[in-house]
Length: 184
Image 1: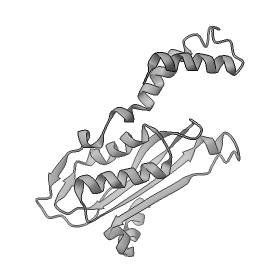
Image 2: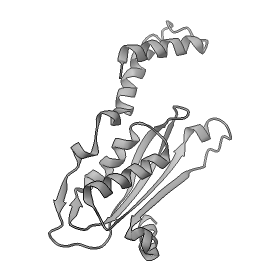
Image 3: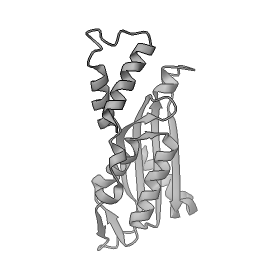
């Protein structure tokens, strides 16, 4: 991120909105926004490949591995407003298994970018497919979007669910049903 250019743009935005960018409460806002965006959008400087830990499936475990209620937040690429929610991920291993925290990490890496929810869902599944080569994956994200809550139709209680299935999850309905039961 070009911090200096971003700070200048934030100051111009404040002025364009009719604010006095030099008043006490706003003087340091451009620098605060830069620091916030550095943290909120730190997914651009990260790759799952650099953070993943994969182990040999020495026990030949061949049933669902599930991690749910993974909290995430992201920034809508259409309105630059936050959206936030939970992710649920399952896979059936083949030769490899993954460190449990890495399921949360793959969500975090992709959520910390300008995004849409559909793309995060697909990116999570794609990374698991690429690094684990599992028999199948199931990914479900449920989120609330401030662009839907604070503007437009103002639906405060609405949420959006996106999901994707690969491999054996796509082929066997009973596995999808078990996945949904795990979610509750």
